[in-house]
Image (cartoon, rainbow, N blue to C red; front, side):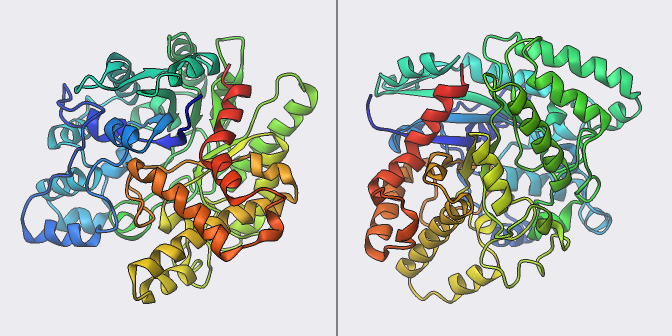
Length: 480
């Protein structure tokens, strides 16, 4: 099999599908630039969001240039919470201003944003249309040299990647609200009504030729299923309010939804991705998985956290000892908010034979102490070294927590490219993966950072596991 890279969480579809409404004008191969109105407000917003790359990062052309040929593509309808500004910004900014901001920050078109604001916007309908949009684009690239195909299982994936000019796509979802909950309309319905609705829709999705392999049940806002962790910082947190549902546990409806997703009686299992879930919800889910796996050793459920950092806490409960605020992370090397993985959580994922995808976002990986060092770095080379060290220290935190050589089997890359991230400079897109590989290897060879935790692997072997082999091993076992 040819050498290539794997990314277990990207959004190449977000800007492409949102390029216009009702019919997108862009395809998944295009490099799409964020538009913005040239006025004082938008120049301010553009400067304030300069950490966000203003072009598509994981379009399929960039994937091919970076030899990233197995990807988990996340379908993520825009949440309505992003379109409800807090009271003060809502009073200061008129509708045009709000549309300008959303168009520029998301990289989607004004018509697409307008549709999300309308009463006609339906999560489940949007999810189905976006799914069809991706499925229908399978085949040759516009230039005719390359192609992509959606994999149905690992055996099919192997067949796809034998062609060095093909990308194998595994579908996933981000947000249980995509099934039609977490809205004013759904909150007016009874729990029993919603249970029936979710059962029907989960069964329908599982019957598709290309159902999602996994789903992040939570995203940024309350969805009636389970609580989420605080994720928004800076300008985003100023504009919109994600406090409702933060740190809540699972609801009765959420437990029903989880069982329907994981069941094999209504179609293939859709695995749960714990990223964005609250600590309380994660704790309950971990307990369920541990009991299930004990009773069903031949049908284990793997734990997945597809795009994350570590928070440095020893125990899961320590993650919520304080509310997640900028002050909490001020003196921490790692971003210590509860959305990130604690040492205990790393051990639980390891025990389940799961997988953890390291996000390539410096604001998710690094806390205040790291960013102070970054701001005082005088050269681009120094900044790059600091970011490579941050990524490696995050990885070593997981290995140290698990205290086993097999910890090196559960770590992958889940870049979250095109998910409005503040990428690790200079790794601005998928086409930078070859450079990232070489730089990660060189950094370890030069510094011997935590050599006692290498467990006999060479730097090259470690990076190959993280950027390719671990994800393939995981899919071989569970994508069946």
